[in-house]
Image 1 (cartoon, rainbow, N blue to C red):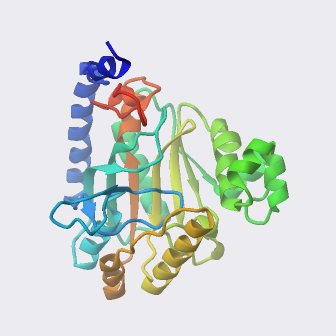
Image 2: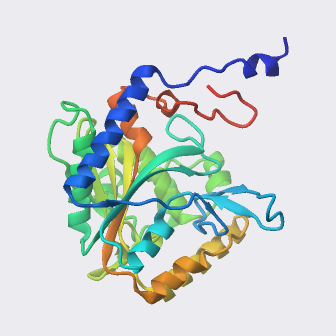
Length: 334
């Protein structure tokens, strides 16, 4: 029997029945949390003619026979349509959905995964961070979190762990702190934010308490993504992430509401994509038009639901909590 034929017979789910039962319980718990906070569940389209421009995220493309000349894309997040809903007058909203990202496959990443995303009107950074901690605490199995969440500024975390100031350190200093070698140079080049991301992964996050949540906030302005810049310090953005140990669970913003600034950031993303050999992406003009009509002051957050399952099921590979995980190009489903 050929290897391909043998792989095709590997039809078993990658998640155990116990993991599937845990997923069902957690989905109910998530919806109960939002119902208790009067947050409306919504549904957004998975297929779009537009794609995110973020140079660190790759959309999965799709084709339709009814429109063969157009390239479509699977959503990487429901963020854009959800913000259009807020612009149209919707209240606080949440969604639990499948999202897709190309180029991400490993023990903590799969091209297809489940995301929980929500938006709260009028929330500032502290409020949305506290809301996120409350959600995560409600979702994680009792006894696994041993104390209150620790809040730390991005800059302070870098200074404490590496002695390097991420807001003003030279590229050479960042490379030195990352134990620079030729392999890293060939992959990261002179992209400053990529070196910061590497330091966060290798030097900062491993120092977070394994049995507590850590809220890391006020990322550099260059990593604002769709967050607004801090009105008190334009060097940093009102963006935060929440970790359990060194596992990132949530990414949130006080949302950028300026349509002109958002378009400028998209243009900068496109330039960065060109500079790294990535394709330009079609802009979501409907999203930009919605922003131009007026996005109310709000804050939003996205949580990787499968990673919460990993914690509750004591599994160290995301494939173990997905019914049928994608293994990788040319590989069988696990």
